[in-house]
Image (tube, rainbow, N blue to C red):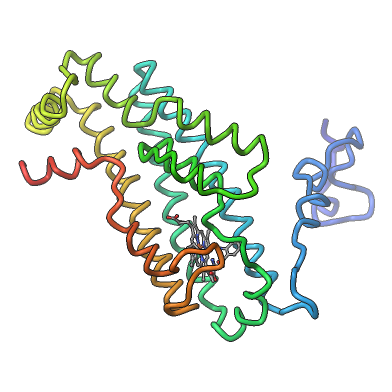
Length: 273
Ligand code: HEM
Ligand SMILES: N[C@@H](CC(=O)c1ccccc1NC=O)C(=O)O
């Protein structure tokens, strides 16, 4: 309800107080800011100046991972229910978030290796390798690899359950194959899928929605690859060839993951166009 504030009131005049109507929801209570802003606890003692940045960056990543999972799950479901425009719309939002995720590396790179060294030794054996949401995104996208679940240490029951469910449920690629089947294509073998993709690519006016969806999936794949590439170069800049706190060989291990692609058939298609 309006309080009928005048111009003076709009600029903070004494008679008008914004945000007091009903006296219930506020900016801080809605966004749970007291809780959110109390979650940055440093391990270093005395406190290392850059550790707040390190924690904040990772927490922001995890918030965006949560959003990405929300959108990818809905995109997958939209494909399964035949709402192709919605599936594509949500994937495009994911692309925008993924670009931000890669750009965020710039912020972390304002930290020098010396300043990282002030608290790095406190982090072991914790590592980004243990990010459950990151692995959920990989599984949901199509790169299901149960060996990662076995290699995780210290997962809570809830986290174990989340990963187990992601291993069971359909991936984005499974959903795309369902789209192909509904459009009348045979998907029984890899060869038949290749043929379907070639046909779609060769007749975009007839298969516009299915083609654009494939392009959106490929874009998601490319943006994930760009993050991996950016991350490993940052790692080399920060720790050179040292082993990782998570127990891997470090940059060497990360380089072994650079060739990962969620949708190899969409990439192979390129050679046939
Ligand atoms: C100073 C910055 C960073 C360094 C030096 C670093 C280093 C590493 C290393 C060495 C690994 C291999 C696992 C191990 O620890 O043995 C790793 C994995 C990983 N890191 Fe980072 N990291 C940094 C920042 C980040 C950030 C900001 C994120 C964002 C969430 C992140 C996410 C990950 C993920 C998801 C993995 C697993 C990758 C995979 O298995 O393919 N890292 N990191
Ligand atoms: N694995 C990194 C440490 C690190 O970056 C990290 C440590 C704890 C939680 C998240 C991390 N981020 C990415 O791996 C290292 O070996 O220096």
